[in-house]
Length: 298
Image (cartoon, rainbow, N blue to C red):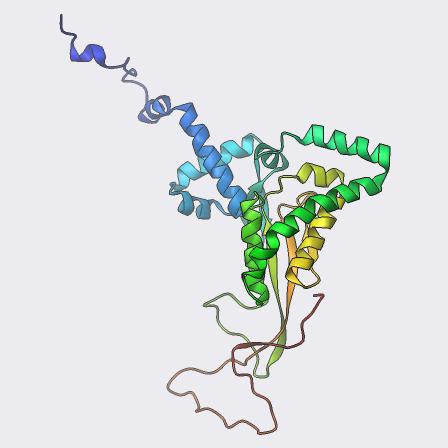
């Protein structure tokens, strides 16, 4: 006997159930979990990041994005960081999402308890110098692997920092760089009539630390990593924050040196023609000219 088409249809949701509830019953919990893992990975990679930026990146509606962020926040995997933009001035700080300590742990440091216990026993048996030597040996391998990658970027310090960030990402540190010291592209120029010196720097950020728990217990790991960065880049760098120390990201300050910012030039039909330069006065040839004086410290 041939089955009725209705017999093959799963049990229907009662007609008095609202449409939203019907949809919720159809959504697989596994699908939601996988989606939230994507959101968590995006927060790791981009954080501190706004809900709107996440929605654009992942293709979610604002309502769907809020639902996933609320769920991750309730699970203690992400937290809100209030950030005041450097160009917005006064006003209410914007909400940005970052991974919490629990979220960082979820992304992969299940070995932590065993590793911390092993290093603690090493320190008890051979002294703190043994832990420092262990960290030095570990990061010596990183320095050896990263050096050809950084050297291939050439002499430009910003390019070398970017190459270093890429190598860190390959190893799970989620590296990124940001140049600090000049206004963002498209921003109105506010440089006064006279040229003024500006300090340029690169901030090298690491959104994840696979050894965060170890570094929290043994600061020698952060110290050795900072030393590797300085030797690879050839300048004295400074750590501004670390995940191990409670920061939302690890941030390393890399000085690029002083620049001379050119004065703003009037634009329009009423703008005067180019003035003749005083022969005795040096004129900048570019909007931002790197000085030959390289700064080792900010």
